[in-house]
Image 1 (tube, helix red, strand yellow):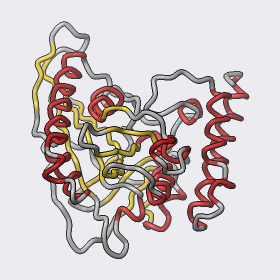
Image 2 (tube, rainbow, N blue to C red):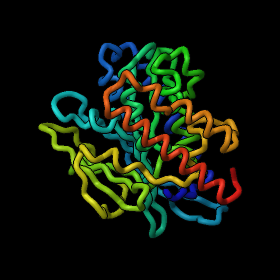
Image 3 (cartoon, helix red, strand yellow):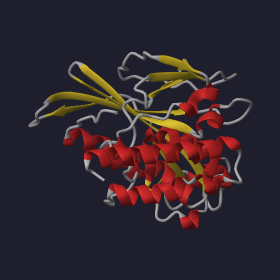
Length: 310
């Protein structure tokens, strides 16, 4: 299970101010970039990406200088064996923290659409992203503001925006849910230089997969990064056999939501969203993923029943 990073209130405030400003600037640039979705994503990433900030924390149990930076990598979405086709993600956001002798990183995968209305493609991409359900979101670029949605919301709506409910302003999804470890994972990371994605799977193995591409965007990470060791190197075709590790109670919790739901209630909602019968019209890969998700949901419920927490 991914660790939760303790971040002092002063540092949270500093990061939140940056995110609020960055998303506002990205939204203001909508009309100059909206003809191409990748351009919007690149502009958002450029606004969010920042070098190292230092906050001198006082009157806290961990006082002293805290350093942070926000990073972004855009995955290749076109061509044979594009990274996006394997992950379902447009890219990844990463928050780097450094204080004292420790350095931490947490990451969040994302898929994005411009003025999302009805998108069967987004359903397929979200099903792929369900391998990292607790560390993935969908973003809707709109001229009035960018909104974030959980993977569950997209799948439950069958890709129809009007059925997905209210989204969360992107600045809140990143400035609150992501920073405060309500979404995202410390066990998920991406090395842009080697084009490798890393995460810990349900067997407790740290796995890594490399994507071979003819060209790439390089983004220099200025904050310290933990050594990237792996227990197992996997092929892109094996990615979805390695569901990201989460605790049973986390699997039966809503993502990107302030609502409190009991595990039994959440299990019913997830079973409806991921039931394989909903995906009969989709390719075998997506039907297989739905089956995997249902097995995981049932296993999480069984574990909580054993503990008396269901």
